[in-house]
Length: 117
Image (cartoon, rainbow, N blue to C red; front, side):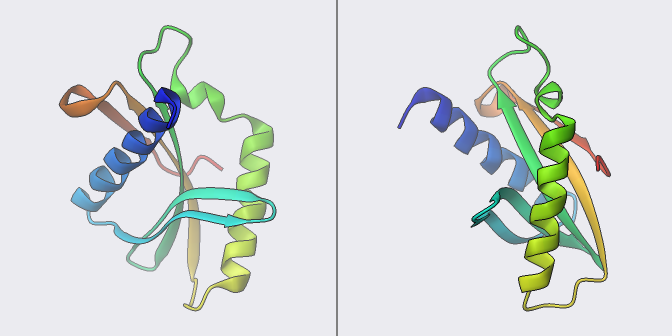
């Protein structure tokens, strides 16, 4: 596994723990269909939250949130609609969030933006 892949996987794990510590229940990770992938799907209350995770070792080349473009958000909205259509559970409210993980290990910083799309 390439260092970039390892960093990304560790960032997603860190994001899941961060969300669970704040009362979100994990529904799915790395959900895929022909249109793409949703990193994390969590539930809190009656809200199903679809989370895009961006991990960087530093901000030397920009903040991770800068990688979430309008095109990326449009694709995430399509993926969210596809997931909801296939869901085996009632979906009352949906939200798109972004989580940035900067660094690695215990020193990693996690930032969470709710309602990005």
